[in-house]
Image (cartoon, rainbow, N blue to C red; front, side, top):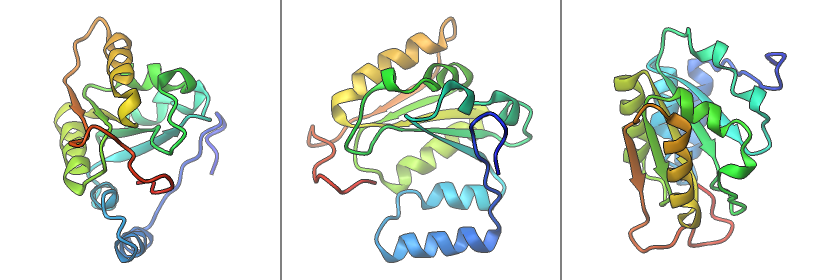
Length: 171
C-alpha cells in the first residue's frame, strides 16, 4: 500500500515471513534471515531504501513515533553501486539514525544480527549495503550527515579487499 509520499509499506503476516525465510534458506540466501525474524518477532521495523527512491521515501513520520526500533537499509550493493550521490534519501536517513553500519563485504547473518542489535540499543540504525569501492565515500558522507552528533559507526570491509567478487551474485 502506498503512503502517499512515494513509499510503500508491506504488512507481512508471520506465515509469509516464515515462507520467505524458508525460500531464501532453500536457495542459500541466509544473510537477511535475522532481519526477517526480527520483523516477525516484533523487535524492529525495517525500511529499505533503493537509489531510485526520492527523499520523500524516507518518511520519518512513519518511524519516528513507532514504538519499535528502526533498521533503515540503504541498498547500494547491486553491481551498480553508486555511493551516496545517487541516493536522495541518504542524508535524511543517516541524520535520523543513532547508529551506522557501512557494510562492504559479503553479507553474513551475524552482520545483520549486529545491525539489529545496534537498532535495538540505539533505537535506530542505518545499514548501508555497498561495495568495497564506495565504503570510504559512504563513511565520510554518513559522518557529515549526522553532524553535529557523533554517531557510533561500524565499517565492515571485505577480508580479501574486493566486494563483490562474482558479477550477478547479489546478496
